[in-house]
Length: 485
View (cartoon, rainbow, N blue to C red):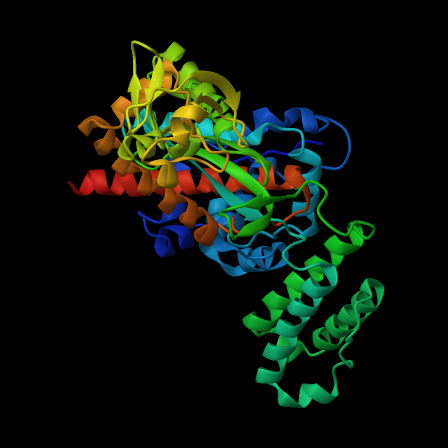
């Protein structure tokens, strides 16, 4: 049954909030910015309105997820902290003496209440609307890029992951009490998952029996994370790897196993839209969807800034139709024709042929795709002319005559190449660094470097809360800077 925090709560201890939580505290500012009651409207169909036991308030449950994104704590440690941290209780809408939820409720809330909700778009739209109403963004420009998130199953397999976490627990236990070396179970050295799980459970039991050690934050938190890992692996016991995750590449030499989040952000560093895909997906094809989602809240969009992945022909055509300028460098393959020009080859526009440094004109041309799938125009020179040419030894190919090619540039690509030479392009392209910093912030301040759950659905929930919280923090900072001026 749906339960809400609509009743007025009275407590003789409520004055503690006024005494101990400053007016400019981040949580107060969050609550002033956002009316979290929208959670009721989005999730009311997930609850029975008048039957069954009263469920935990959905707004409070959602706020727990926001706190998890901010703190990086496990579910168990997050709930434990909310027992005694008054700022957490204040944000959750609880009175100082109120009880907190059981940590298992958070897992059920994510799986049962949020799984089918388009929460990512909803939360980003909420924060963009707030930023727009406060005139913190102009809404005419977005910067786009993608950031990768490692799968929960990688880079180590399940046995190696358990061994790594168990090693961290033992290390901190030994540092706190060296006598525990004789009391803990013998370390399992094999690679059998069932045997490793049995050992880890025995390790957890042995450490948990020592109440004094469990009071230490370093040990209790790592023990909780180890428990969560065992529970997750048992839930996916027959799965060796995350089914949804895929191998992606950051460069020619580095790869990752997981997912990509494609992000659109204003120059003021407010995220306007995001899509989540598997790791192998290219960045360019996601641009139309990022633009569409952004235009729902920022219809005045005029400009997109990104790297070369977003300057593909389809994106250039779509942007031209919508009157949007793309500030991105075209693929270097489209520019390499200048290399032949530097070697003395020139294009004769009247004959529509190429002339070599010795003055010979190509005798034929054909259009074909190269090994990378790009359209190119190939020009063939005469075997007879090349055979007697003075430059034959340095110019002719292995077949005794020259064949060169130039990438075929469309009208849109030609215009983009010219646009790249302008001061306007250079000015806006310099803004691209901001999204690199935003990607780093998401990973290291909001726990987005590694997926907390298995599957792309879990990452969408994690990403939605992380991006929402990141936007709220940014709005608070922009408001503070605006007030100080």
